[in-house]
Length: 309
Image (cartoon, rainbow, N blue to C red; front, side):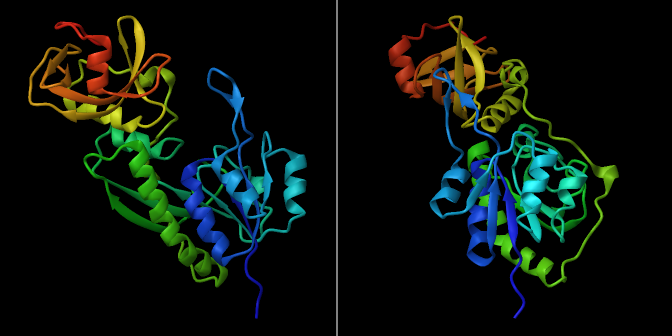
């Protein structure tokens, strides 16, 4: 009986975890490669990624190179003799030299219908654009960003109330359901390869800090999509009484209010979008924990006519 493929997994976020767990159930997992932990927050604490904690718990080696394309790391990983790389939400582009290490190359599990939304933030960009469907693409990697031959593509309908968090979780589970069959098709040399149609490409660059700021003048649909695309992190931002306020959960309101104007009615917190309004359900004042809209009303004693800037 031929041996099973030896796999090295590259991933850095919670999106990767269901996928790598599914892989380990059916294939030898030599190592998990993840981004080097960086200090975050006001206390500058270094936290271990969820995928690294899981790997340590199940006794899988964890590698965290500063740059996976360094010659020393390529030499280190070559010594493990992998058959295949599997990558999902890793955060680095793998060089041609690194992709040449495994005998079968490397595949990427990407949360969009490529060639649409190539890049670092496909889920957030799809939500910002108000897309009604997205999906998973599994493809062979080359040295270009999200460019190689497609093995599998499956569509997923976006729920009107999906946030970045909920849609990411659904896509991750969706990908985990597919990954074993794909790996078996690669192992048996039965997988199909379809060229991407570059003329249909679009990009999903990383969200910049200035893009997190809400413009209250662009209309209810764009604002609603902006907020859900950044929830639960990094959070859409605005200013209230000169201090930053993050907004995470909203619903469309029945009132029409001037852009940015706050209004309290039936113990609900409304904000105007010019053409309509939104009801704010969850938000976070600067240097405080997340609170409900009702708690914000009670704690800050909102005055009629106050606004978000």
